[in-house]
Image (cartoon, rainbow, N blue to C red; front, side, top):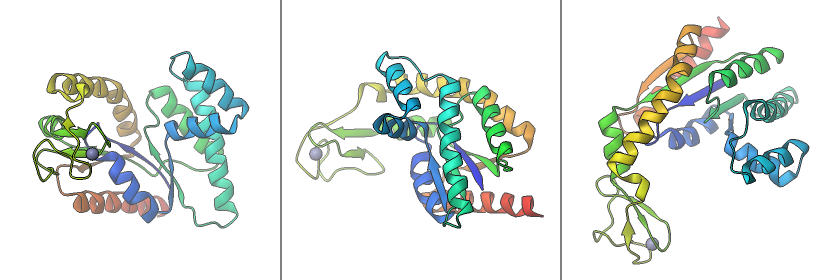
Length: 228
Ligand SMILES: [Zn+2]
């Protein structure tokens, strides 16, 4: 089972990935984690990544794909050994159409294919409200939300009494710019997967448990229909 989770900042994608991954026995594959791990292990690919990141550049597609390929080979090996692993849950990868094509090839070489690409859909104004209400403790880093998760005393951290601040990139203007950038980047990807018939959409404007259940239902029903 190979699943891609997509969703803008504030859509709850990270939260949902942490919830559904273990339930489906899927190993999370996030490029940020893989880059960190490769750098720490000082593998040949890791040293290349480190040099690029230190120079302030983006890791090119070819190198990203190579690192993902290594990880997927490890997951396939674990599966073959009979470990409790059903596949991978991609978070933040692929980001571009060339990466999506490379992923299709890597999976095809392993005799696998994508089970589902699920987009967590949240209306734009809801995303802005979620992100703009975020407050962070300047002392201990605890994150609050003025409506969804407010502190006992407005502006003061429950844990340490520190002052709660809004990050500079959490203003409505900055958030709107980030969301537009996300749209521009992902539109071609969503079109690519819609054309392949693997794209599912889940309403992300519901409580966390309901979103989780809808995601699990969508993924399991696609997995069933692939077996048939
Ligand atoms: Zn604090």
